[in-house]
Length: 315
Image (cartoon, rainbow, N blue to C red; front, side):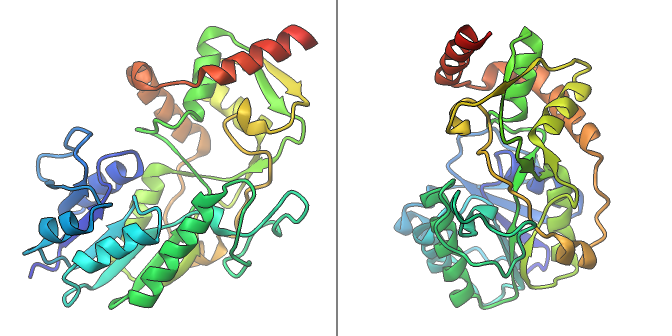
């Protein structure tokens, strides 16, 4: 069994695509497993087409395959985790990495988590993320109870960069292009990011120098929502037109929930010396990608309607 064979779950979309590209560049033999809805990432990558929600299909798709490393980028819940572990031949596994989320930390508007949030903070229902967070908790728990090899769980806050079809930085770029005002939630919460290619390089480093455990990942320096908007503007060489907004439920008209999502990332930075891409440079790369792919991004017309109504009433 080749020690360089890696299976990536979800290796064709955003984070998974960048991880797959980084692994191929580092000399790994890469297999991806996904539904085949996106173009093949790299000619050297081996595709396994399968719906991970189908346990029988997973067993059939992975039969005869043996991997030294598995990286689960797309896993959302316990059932998907169980389908994977039930289909893997685990006797030769050397490492397993699961990409979880900061959404696993328990909090409500009345009881926010401590800032920055350590890995030891309580897990549980998170008002801002609902089932997404609790489902990730259950997936983490399954992998921890199953793991036949060193397990690393990564909990990022917000990921940005090329291939991001989520309406976040692209939402700002669209406003900048059209001169549309941007409604800024009154609280102006702190946000924390990690550039997608930095995350991919970190995952490669973990394969090369395993340090099993649970780690928050992200830039050590958070930014406010207003700072984020201005940095997106600098990346696009434009100035955002910002309008403070007092509407509730910020996520209805802004790309992020209005709470401080800031993690303590000191542990992972002490172990791996991954040079961080400057925030503005990462956003410049994201903007260059956006200019080529903006027609593929589906924006939410309901957000435009809320903006229009608020601006007509307040300006």
